[in-house]
Amino acid sequence: MTYSNELESKIKDYLSSLSPQAVEALVSNLEQAKGKNNSDPHLSLILTAAVTLMRKPQTFAGGIPNGKFRRAQVQRMFFAPLNDFLIGETLPSRQEGRINRIMLDRVWNWLGRDVIPNDVKTVLDQAGDATVSDERVVALVQALRTRSVEAVEETLERSEISDKVRRQIGVELGGERGISELRDIHKIFAAERWLVPFLQSIPERINEHRLKQDHDVLRLVDKCSARFPDHVPLLAAALVERSEAPSALCTFAGRLAGDQDPKVIAGSQFASMVDVVMSEAERLQILALEHRNNNPDPVAFSQALSEYHTLVRGVERDMDLSISGRWHQRLADTKRNISGEVTRELKNAHGAIRRALQVPKFDGDGQLRIEQPAIDEAIRTLRVVTMARNASETFAVNEIGKQTRQTVEQTLEIVTRSLITDLGRLHGQEAEAQLAAVDVAIMLSEIYFGAEYAGQLRRSRQSAVAKATGKEKKNEPAPERKLVSNALERW
Image (tube, rainbow, N blue to C red; front, side, top):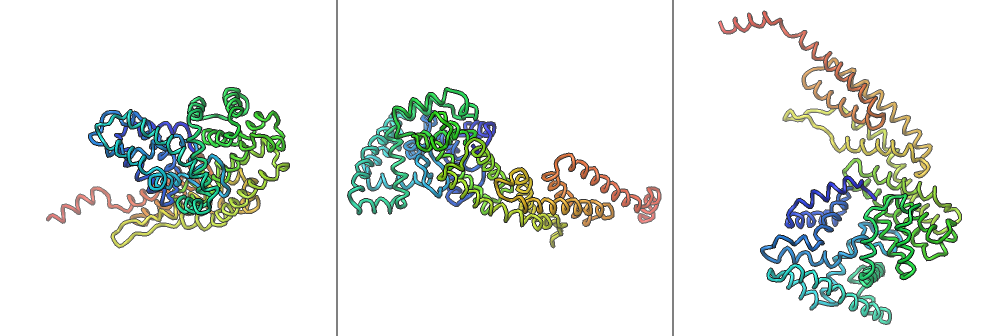
């Protein structure tokens, strides 16, 4: 959804080349970063790929000298059926089938301490025993998952008639929301016998054409929903995770319902297909805000905004939400929230660019002090300004967007030309500092105006450097005079 298939494939190929111990260490570090709200746009993709690789039974092939590594994999193997349902954000509205990754540790600890402690201990001990085969460990984990279905179902039933039990579960898992996510985990595990084969039968990546016109995935989902109508929200959550164009699920829901009328879809068993698209809009909105506030990567915020815009544009193109109050309101709420952040970014654009174009200074050690945070801020802002130019309606920034573009264009053109002009009359450290500022200005101009304009600026830069170099050469003494001078000094 967030990254190209090519990038995803390259990451998987690289991870596959690592040793199991290296993958384990990588996952541990990435999970710690995730827990610290690191919003690196590549973190979730790498973490998901690494965890998926570790969960495969063949990961253990090659013989582990002791069971320590294998024991550490038991929890991940246990939760393997949840791969298509995990997200890293807390949605404003709970969406059935979309489980926050932070729940896994909570549920595992709760199971091991309060629900089936002896069963969990037995599996961990067996996994830690190097004499026990990998196949045996896989079978034990499967049996543990089956045992957990029975135990959790019994506990949830008791929570319905006992407020004390419900409060105890809520304390361990994070209140009513945690209990709701536990129900989803239980539902997926209970359906594992048919759900996992179903997920294996559909493509890992589903393009827009497949959802809107082809019949292969449609037949599979239609057949499955007829047999298991209560599990349609789970199917929807898995499909949105695998879809290259999540908004196409709105049309897909109409095909399943037999009518593209939003009211008909809303009244059908396939309404959750549209619900999950709205949840994806909410997730992308949260992701965008996290990137702007916490991620130093200057590209992440605009990438998330672009993903959000693509989804919203697709939904509004394929479905008339004006006659569907519930979905219209959910989407409107996300647009209002994200519009405020984009507006603040646009208002900051002029100042950010001016700060990035300042000529750097030398410190006491003679090193040029490049203000990289200021440059990164300008890159982020310019990418947002450029992206918002074609998405002003989505973000409701028509007027502020137009004003910002005019200011940005004037600032970039005037300051960049001035920096290049001044470069031709400077030398030494002054020229070095000026050249650094010119290079930043050209880079920012390329982001906004494009490669052709940046190419013209680079040619002007080369001319200015040549001019400055020529002046320095003119000020040098003639070669013959230098030779005579050196000879006199020796005498």
